[in-house]
Length: 269
Image 1 (cartoon, rainbow, N blue to C red):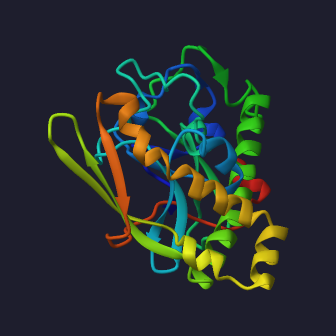
Image 2: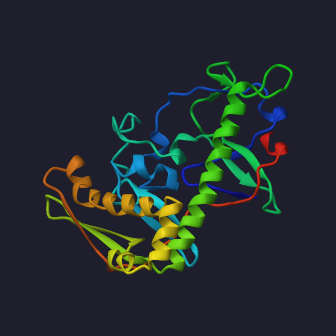
C-alpha cells in the first residue's frame, strides 16, 4: 500500500469498525511539521505561497513536483515556533492542512483509501472534537468534508503533474543550489532542487508560450520565478543579519507525493 508520507508516523486505514468512537480535536497546532524544511505544493497554491516561500521543483528523472522551502537545514522549519504555531500571516500549504488525514492506494494502485495518523495528539476516544462516524457507523459530515478536501487535493495534484511534465518536456528546468551565509559566519547550502531557466523560457516558441498561457501554466511559472526572491529574505526574517544567495550548481534530488488513481466510493472507509 503506497502512502503519501512525510511527517506521518502511524498512518492507519480509516474504518467504521476501528474508528467508530474516534474524535479528532482540531487546533492542536503544527508541531508535527517542525522538523521538515520543505513540503509539496500544487499549482493552484502558487499565487498564495509565492508571497511567503521560495517555490522550487524537486524530484528524480520524470517525477518532479513543486515544493516550498521552509528552512535551510533538513530538520528545521522556520515557520513553526516552539509552541507549534505557524508564523502569523503566512500561507499554510494544503499538504500540511490536510494532516492528520492522508490517502493511500490499494495494491493495484487504482483506488484511494483514507488513512489517519494515529500518532496525532488530537485523536481521542473522549468525544473531544469531531467524530468520524456516528453511533450507527455512518460517516459524519466532518468525515465527508475531509474526504471531499482530499479528493480535491488529488485532482489538483494530477493537474500539477501535467504542468511539471510540460516543464520537463520543454527542457525548462535546471539544477540549482541555495547558499546561505549566517551572521556568525556559518555557511549552509541547500541542493537537490530545480528551477525554471529564464533564458530557456524566453526562447520558447510562440505556440509553446500560448499553450502554457491557455492552461495558466505560464502564470505559475512567473509566480515560481517571483518566489525565488525569498531565498534572499527568508533567513533574514528569522536570523539577524543573515543573507542568502542562489546559483545553478547542484544536482536535483528526491521527491515526495504520489498517486493519480481515481477515488472510488469505497475508498471512504
